[in-house]
Image 1 (cartoon, rainbow, N blue to C red):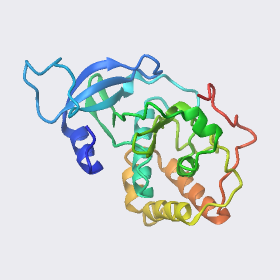
Image 2: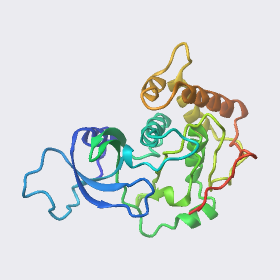
Image 3: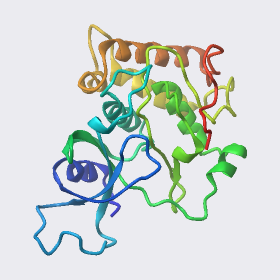
Length: 256
């Protein structure tokens, strides 16, 4: 299922009944694939073959997170939701609809499944500096993404490119790590500057938080929100794509 209005998808994700239909075996955080029913399914519905109208989603329970040395335990699913909120403020729809809710094994993150273009080659997109990836590089700079792999890029058949796996974002330490360094040092274009400015407006100030900051306060710490304000201000001040922190690895491993 692909709804025309992402808000309708978010609402379905928020209240729908979840049926686990598989696992993502390569996931380090026990991710599952679920079918999201609009209403409680009957006994005959459970386990029936998939229908193109079904809404599928990725479910990551918080208790399934692998502990990391540089991020607080039990916060990765919330960071995924926080990244979606920032994505929505940019107006670019980079992160698929994502919510925090209860489900199998307790609280977790639920994100719309994206059907990708089977003909797309994300490695070639990265190596060829596909201009569609500039928006994602801009977004990553805003949220301080420390794990932008090529495999996290999801090109749809209609040409739009989503990005997923944002559990290690919003650190107060500059640790941008990515395969998208093609534009480092280059000026942002007007559209990119406008998107970053929308994030600044949504964050507001510590004295007068904007709506984005208010929503983020339920997901990440006040220090991480303030660090995001500082990053956004710096991006708008320089007007350029940042480069890597010399004290932090520039590229994640594995990169793809």
